[in-house]
Every structure is written in C-alpha cells, then in structure tokens.
Image (tube, rainbow, N blue to C red; front, side, top):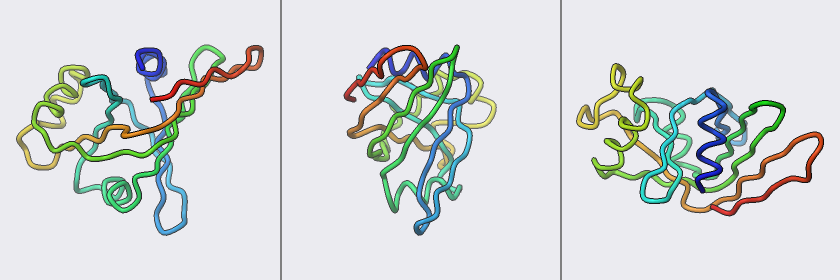
Length: 130
C-alpha cells in the first residue's frame, strides 16, 4: 500500500473517475492519505462527486509521474470518523485553508477493496492489491 500512496503523492495531481447515471465523470484530485493502512481521498459532501460515490462506490484513480502511470480501481466507502478527517488534513496541510474536520462538509472515503497497477512503456505492469 505504501508504494501506491507514494506514487500518487509523487503525481501531485491525479484524476478520479466516477459514474453519474451511466456517464463517466472525471476530475482532478490532489489530496491522498494513508490512514490505518488504507488509501483515503477527500471531498466536500456538497459536491456532485460525493453524491456519485455514495450512489456507486466503484471508482478509478489515474496519475502519471516520470514516464510511469498508475490506475487504482476499486470500491470506496465513506469514513465518518473525525480521526480520519484529521489524518487527511495532517497529510495535506494545504487543505487546512479549505476544510476543517468539524465544518460538517469535509468528508473522506477509503478504498474498501481494489487493485493498483503501475505501468510504463518499458516494464511489465506491477499489480498491487489494496
């Protein structure tokens, strides 16, 4: 799991794909956390992406760094614990100007299950189970 976290962190920006009534929706994300050995992402519960993940937890992340790219596919689940939100803010201090663990809108999701694959043009894909 550390390798997946480190790779996504090195990307800076990665992209999250969700489903909205059969239509793919993709948007940039940058906040990632490794809390209790699980991969977490953060959003605001007032956004469409939140509604999409609540309706269909199957998502995919994709990012690229130094000629390699990662795809993380799996199922996410919301974690309502304050401790998980605090961990996200500790791992991503730039979020502190935008979010608070107690503001009622910040929320985090973790990968309940999934697979990460790291690709390159020269090496065989590396598959990591989450």
